[in-house]
Length: 109
Image (cartoon, rainbow, N blue to C red; front, side, top):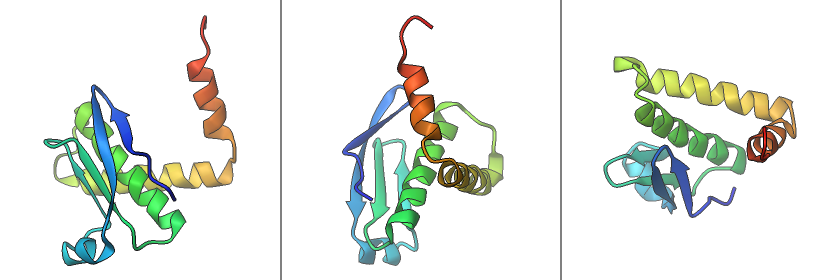
C-alpha cells in the first residue's frame, strides 16, 4: 500500500510517512499516531493488507482523539475492534466506501 502524504482528521492535517521496519520493530510497534506533532507513521515491513489495516488503525486513533470518544484504559482495544470491523466490511463489500465518498461529495443534498 502506498501511503498518502497526509490525512486530515478533525481540524488537523497529519503528515503520514513510512517507518523503517527495523525501527518500528525496535519500538515493538507496527504504527504510531502522534497527536501533539500531527504525525502518523506506518512500518514499511508489512504486506499491503496488513499495512492498510495498520494505517486505518492509526487514523481511527485520530478520530477517537478528535471526537473525544471516552475509551479510558480500553482505547487500544476499541480502536483495534473498530478498525478490524471496518477492514472486514471494506473487503466484503468492494466499492461500498467509494459510493459513500461519492455521496458525501455531492452538492445540493
